[in-house]
Length: 71
Image 1 (cartoon, helix red, strand yellow):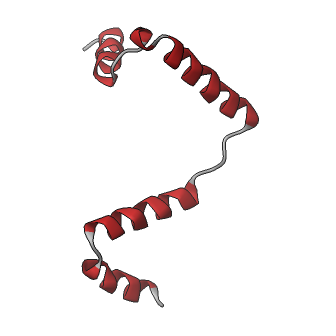
Image 2 (tube, rainbow, N blue to C red):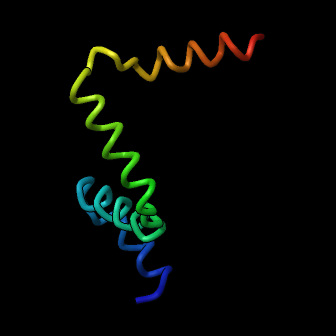
């Protein structure tokens, strides 16, 4: 099937099918994490689960970064 044929078939897919297609396409570009990065993710996840009240929302983080950056 050519790329143009694939594009022509997209409208016939359900929303769920298109979302799955998009996720799968993005996964193809995902590079695996290094062992050090995997360890860091596990460490930070454990920290969060041990003390979820210490986390801040994305909005709060953005506000803090904007405040540091200035106008």
